[in-house]
View 1 (cartoon, rainbow, N blue to C red):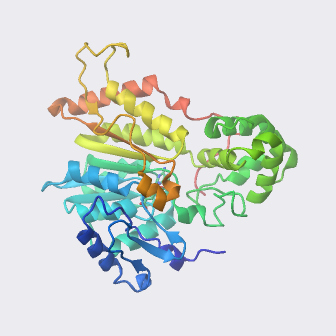
View 2: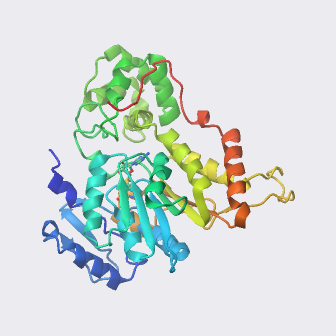
Length: 411
Ligand SMILES: C[S@@+](CC[C@H](N)C(=O)[O-])C[C@H]1O[C@@H](n2cnc3c(N)ncnc32)[C@H](O)[C@@H]1O
């Protein structure tokens, strides 16, 4: 089944929980959206407070930004007021979170990025429906390049960054992208379709050793040797379903009967490698911590333990800052605490109510860090802390240098 542009448009960004935004306001947003001809007949506004309202694309297509209520609450708590604030959405997707935050906070300007051009096109259409006075600029780029878009708008720093990692349902469900082991498609998995390296080259041309390392490092796959060997023995492999069969018979029968889908870890690992996901997350967070304004926030939603570990390690190191005291005793060295946790250190998980409505949010983990205000020294202390983080947790910890030597550059 091909997903047409029209089908994609109707993944609405306006789906979030009633508990966090007033029902009247939500109703207004829905009505504004329903003015568009594409939305006709698609809006379902429920008056009953128990039921969360959402836009329904067809009987089974709903776009619900994950933990949107919690994120909107945090944004409102820290960004409300008359002074204008800059919000960087590094993973714009369909503009779901962005639409909500811009609608709730009239003092916000959005710099939105997504490395997938089709996401930018859809977000642009969705945001245009909200009548936001063009309080945004959208860019087709990776979020680790976010600061390159400051100059055009005359900005040097920002107040709020949201990274909602991973990919949108419409990307997973697109049979031409090759992200899903549940759809038969050619091996691809590129988030930016102009990039040279795709899953096809990784699967068909990388050495057994390199493949095995990728599965181990990015998928925590216990059977990485067996799967890598089976792949190399059966090449060439051109489709996701061929790859599924090979993985299925490479792992022991007893393991196949338990746990999740046998291909889950392998697909995740290849996707992370193809798209340099860990590297971009690392660079984006370090640059974010450095350029964030005092009292500003970085909010990250992760969906698996690998990416969550990176966020946790970097946030913990930022909080420790230049302090050299042992972990076991309270700090007594007087090092300035430039960063703090505005929500519990271990982060937040989706509510039971959200999980009932949107089971795909199950693995979501929300972490937030805030930069405090040390006046004119904030910038200097921030830079010293970021240098220390890079020394203690070097990027090499999260990337692989492989012998296959393929380039990711664009065509
Ligand atoms: C889960 S979706 C975001 C959904 C969005 N928050 C919303 O409410 O519509 C993740 C998006 O991030 C994009 N993405 C993933 N990694 C990226 C990166 N390193 N730089 C820019 N965009 C990225 C994907 O293309 C996808 O569109």
